[in-house]
Every structure is written in structure tokens, then in C-alpha cells.
Amino acid sequence: MARYTPDSKERVRDAVDFVELVSARTELRRAGPARYEGRCPFHDERTPSFGIDPQQKVYYCFGCNASGDLFTFVQETEGVDFKGALELLAQRYGVELEREAEDPKAQEQRMRRDRLLELLERTTAYYERYLWESREAARAREYLAARGLGEEILRQFRVGYAPSAWNTVLLASRAARYTNREIFDAGLVQRSRGSGQIYDRFRSRITFPLADIRGRVLGFGARSVADEPSHQGASAPPQSSPGGRPPKYLNTADGEIYHKGLHLYGAHLARAHATRAGQVILCEGYTDTIALHQGGMPGAVGLMGTALTAEQVAELSRMAGTVLLALDADAAGQDAMLRASALAAKRKLELRVVALPLGKDPADLIADRGADAMAAAIDRSVPFVRFRVERALERGDLASPEGRDRIIDELVPVFATLPPSAMRMELTRIVSERLSLPESLADRLLGGEERARPRARPRPGSSGRERVVSRRGEGRLHAGAPPRGGNRSEGVAARARGTESERAFLALCIALPAAGAAEFADLDLENVFSGDVIRRAAAHVREHLSDPASGLPAGDDQLAALVAELVVEARRDDARPELLAVHRLQLELARLDREILSARSAEHGLVSELAERRAQLKDQFDRATTLALEEVGEAEL
Picture 1 (cartoon, rainbow, N blue to C red):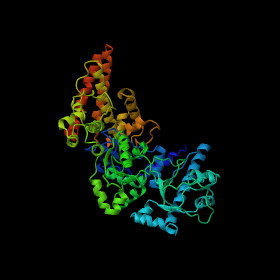
Picture 2: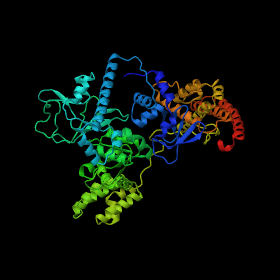
Picture 3: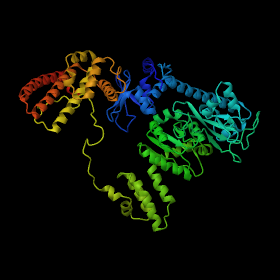
Picture 4: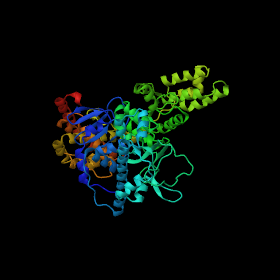
């Protein structure tokens, strides 16, 4: 894989407006001269715990511990690797990337892929011009107008038209010095089963470019508008499907560039709107998506004629936390909703169902009743679990006891996902009324009794990643008597206190680089810091006090995450040298605590000497704390 020069990476870093980049995902407010805060885009929360440093261009969430720099942020929110994040940002901010010397074979593969993408881009532009300028495309323009789609929105989606002649794109691509192999691998031609001759895949069709999240065209969806295509200016092409009527819709086949089920139609245009709104609208077709955008609902994407895949759900989850399913009301559309539910559960996506009139898709509804009718349907969307309950009741046999039992069986797993809540109570009432059952019996049959049983609570800290919230002044300036025993729990507590004060110390050193350099001068990192990662962070900060986000070693994700946390923490409050002195002494106290624990467990004779040294240090700590309180006030501690 080709690599870009370090200078390219730094030029991209310098060009990016980090506040603008993050603001596309969550609303930020200034919380200091070098800090912005907002709700975390990586987990649900009501109180903002997510912060960024716009100068260092790093972020950290004190709620879920998500952290990183601007490249990590794009990787996590856009679902790309580092190279993809670098290229996306370079494209967005107009930075030209320079490549390092690469393996000849890798270079050849990259150049080949670039040529295929260029060919697809050329063809897209040609189809666009043909739609608006050719007489042959008049019927296509009439069809699109009848669907209520205007020229402006169609141009935004780069909708085009493929001419009826069987070799137009083939000959034009050859003239542009593309080989038959390249034209075939780009998915623009197909081969005759009989003669083996190649000819244009898309003919007499409206073309809908299928793009990735960066807007690069990877293939086409195409709708036929002619019953029997003519073949102007050339002999008729070989038969691709003898005796068969051409399908209404035809997509690019899976190949080197395009892979069905990996992308969503219009995602590159909908992404920013969906993220800001916190919800994305999922519909089935190309014209549905375009109609929703034109109707003032630009957070809409389409399935591109495929069954919903795990990859598409992952893309939805990166766009917003709520997905509005505006799928057709027929059986296929409802089955798609059920599949969406199973996949969304793994991503913690909230699914809501937009009820559409039977036989109507979003484009139909907008064309018949206007965009306001569609907006109202979206406003009336219901949680997916309610849709499932109502669907089971509508489709089930309510007349016989056996039929009602089958409905109950179908709904038990649905209710298993519902905690005790007003929603559960209301749905239980609906089921009891429709099935003519006492509400208490319906609740028991649906699993309410089982759910109400008390369950053993998990031991705190027994699972999940340990979270240490690093906030200066929250229960930290605290040093009591030395540990009295050498048991495991006391040791863990001492180490936890030590880690908290160690992070606070390093954050203050970043906030006060001159004072931090003085404190680092005679600091024994190996003994003062209690863990491997925090030691590496201390060593890095000591060497990069003026710019701690730079110079991080590649591949050390733990170090990068911790440094990002420290940089954001450094901007949380007004930093004072008095606080730095207090935390330095607290580090020494924590180190002595560890030594005392170790000496006691080994029944070493140094315990009393260590305890005496600790008492002296504690006196210094108390005096420093008093001074800090006098300088900044107890509220800041």
C-alpha cells in the first residue's frame, strides 16, 4: 500500500479546522481559551462530557473514554482507515499529498485503480450531458419530471442517461486510451455469451451514479425507459439474455471497484445533514432518496435495490443514532424492516418506522400530497418495537385461541427487549385488548413476570473497561494516613489513586510547560509513575511539553489515547503553579504508599523509616495545599 510522506500528513493537520470538523458531528461551545465542549458523538449522553483542543487537534470524552486526534476522529466517524482519513481530509481542505517511494507492484495496482475511477468519472460526466442535451433523452426527462424531480436536484445527484447505441461508451473510452480490460473491469461493458464480443452494459437507461462516502463514483444503477431500445449508428449488439425482456433496473455487477451492499445511495450528500439532525432516513429507491432531498429532507439515503447488509447498517450508525425506516408498506419492505432491526440491535441504533400509505413510496407521497405530507409522516414515526407489535396483531389470527397463542409466541422475543417502562405498559395494554385477555395475563404470557424478578447485580468493575475520570480538583487533593495492610484491595486502591494524581500532574505540566519542565527536571519516572502506559506518557510529555500531540510513535494506540486525554484535561480549568506543586507532592506520597505496602508484605525492616519520610512529606503536602487554597480558592480544588 502506498504511503504518504510525513510532511503531507503535517500539512493536512495544519490545514484542518478541527472545530469545524467536529461541529459537523456534534454542537460545540467554547469552554475556555483553548477548549470546546459538547455531547459526545460516540455515545448517548445528556450532559456534555466531550472536549476538544482546537490547537493540538485532539479530543477526549470523560464519559466513554473515546480519544484521539483529527485523523482518529475521521476514522471513527467515517469508517475508514488512516490512509482513507488522510485522503478524505486532504481532499476536503485542498491539500496535495506526496507519496513515498512504493513497491512497483503496489504502485501499479494503485495506478490501475485510479485509472478505473477516472474512467467512471468521465462516463458519469458524459451520461449527465447526454440527459440534458440529447433529443434521445427527452423521454427520460419527461419521466423524471413526472416523478416531480427538478433539474437542480437531479444535477446535484448527477443523474444521467445512457444512449441506446450498443457501443457509445466503449468507443469513447477506447478513444481516451482505455483498454478493453479496463472498460470491462470498470463495469461499463459486458460480454456476449455467444460471440464473446463486448458492448455497453447500460443502454436506453436513466443512470444513477453509485458513490462512496467521499463522492467517488464506483458504478451505476440504471432504470430502463424504453421497451425496445433502438441501436443508432451501429449494428445491433449480441444478445445478452436470449428471448428475455430487459430488467427495469440494472446495476453495475460486483467487480474490482463496485461491491454491492457496501454503500448507501446518496450517503455522501446526506451524511452532514443526518449527523446534525441526529437521524437518517432510509428508503428503498433512487428516486425516493432524491425526492426526499428535494422536499427539504436531505438526511435521506437509499438501499440501492439490495437487501440491507451489516456494512450498510454500520454506515448508518456512523451517520446518526436514529434511523427512520421509510420503506414501502408491502411485504418486502416490512421484511427489510425486520432485518434492519436484527442488524441495528448490534449497533445500538434506535429504529423508528415511518408509516406510508399502502402502495405508496416516499416519492409517490411527495408527488401526490407534497413534501409536507412526507414530513408529517416522519413526525408520526413510531418506535420499531411498536411497529412489530401492531404488525403481529394485524397479520395474526385473532379469531381462534391457537391463533392468539401464535401471536403471543411471536411477541415474546419482542417484549424481551423492553425494560419495565411506560412503553411496555402501553404495548401490553394494546395486546390484551386486541387478544381479549386480562392485562395481568397478557403481561405474564409476554414475560413480564420473569422480567420483574430481581436479578443479581454484576460486581462493579467486573466487566468493561475501567474508567478513570480525570478532573482536576474532584476528590484528589487528599492524602490521609499511610496504608495499614498489604492486602490486594488496598494495593489496588493505592494504585488507582496514584494513577489519578499522575494524570492530573501530567495535564498540569502540559498546561504550564515552563513550570512543568522544572518539575520534570529531577523526577524519577520509573518510580514515581505506577504503570507502563503512564510512564510512556510521562516520558513523551517531558520531551514534547510545548506540543504533546506531535511526535507520537506509530502503532501505540494506548499512548495516543492517553496523551489526547491529557491535552484536553489540560484545557479544562485555569492552571496554577500552586496546583502543580501540590500534585507533584501527591505523586511522591503515592510512591511512598506503594513502597510501604511492598515493605509490609515482605516484612521488611524499612517500614518505620518509610513511614517517617512519608510523615515529613505529608507536612509539605499540607502546607502546599493551604497555599493553593489561598491562591485559587477552595472551590477550584
